[in-house]
Length: 145
Image (cartoon, rainbow, N blue to C red):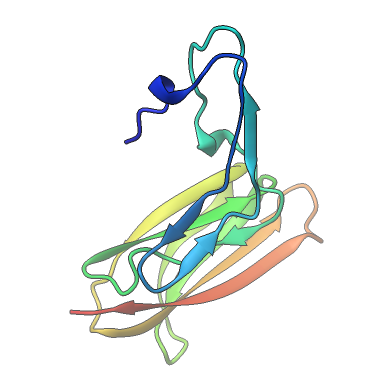
């Protein structure tokens, strides 16, 4: 946790870009966030209130993992979502998400109850009010026992 409030100055403009790494892969934020403080600083809103501009499937973290990993995805609109885990033979192991989700960032944990190896996770999202807008992405992850 970072105490950002004590570092802000009144009537100032701030910006930042978020980068995340697991030691193997670095994910760069596609946006630079900016805000200006007023003459009185009272609070800072959560970054999770930001709405993604496009569908996103992020690399899981940690990766490799044992026993659990987190998968994060972003939805620019309310969508019907299916997030599933597959083995290297293409067999679905589990559905982590299967239903309608609201706009914003979401994350889910997977507790790999499987042998060591490579696995894939696949996000399919269809915009609820416009089924012609569909997003599919697949990423790989490694479970190490």
